[in-house]
Amino acid sequence: MKSIKVTRHFTDGDYGQLHYRTAGKASTLPAVVCLHMVPKSSRLYHNLLPYLAKDRLVIAIDYPGYGESDKPIEQPQATIENYTKAIWQVLDHLSIDQVDLVGYHTGCMVALDSAHLRGNQVNKVVNISAPIFTQKEVEAFHQYYTPIALDESGSRFKTMWERILYYRGPGMTLEMCADSMAENLRGGEAYEWGHAAAFNHAQQYIENIKTLTQPLLVMNLNDDLNEHSQRVDTLINNGERKDYLQWGAGFLDAFPEEASIEILKFLSEK
Image (cartoon, rainbow, N blue to C red; front, side, top):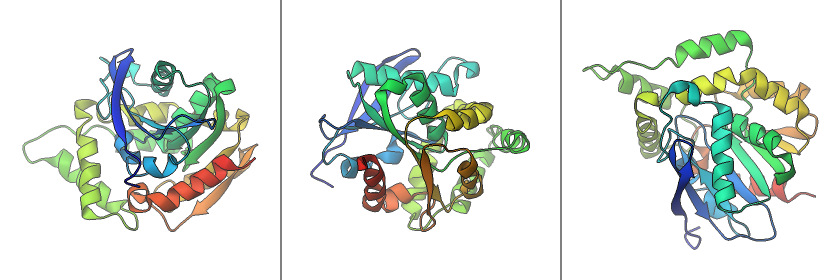
């Protein structure tokens, strides 16, 4: 949707500047706030934003340490709770009162934590996948996503590229893969802090699903969290899981209009 422009902005947060993208204009509808996976950024939603913004304001925010947002000084400050705090700092700066939240992978955790922190300001929640992990899986993920040391042979970058290609979804071109790779690199030496934050939050995410009062849609993709997302059925108390097995990693760039239709359909339901 070339007629709706995506613009980029900054405001101050606890660790420096916070970067965010907006599209559309404020209306009587809640603003849609899009929360990215790590180690990506609000760039993940760039092509989707205009399609969501036909009749409302849409915002995508970089967590501290990702995209163009300044990073915390120390890793212990990189937590889901602090990412949530940063989200509300941006929304307060914009004087936004009512929101719908869309989270993807790590963003799912940030979305639910945000909904619990300020429940009176959150209308509905969309989770693209549901990162529901067992303790054994958490331990394995901590090991799998241990930062890869820099070396002259470029081992870190080879591994990153191999993983992107391995998880590549339908319609994800090599150019999109390269963009994904570039997003990984922007995190610098802190690129895996967000994954660690997510794994440390795994049990709390489960509790947040159980106690969420707002309607929740879990969009289950054909990706690396497909099996984990199916576990939400026994936890969710106000919402549903829907399968979109035609989509995988990269679908927001490959099929932004189709994705927006599904998201807006849920957000518009009475």
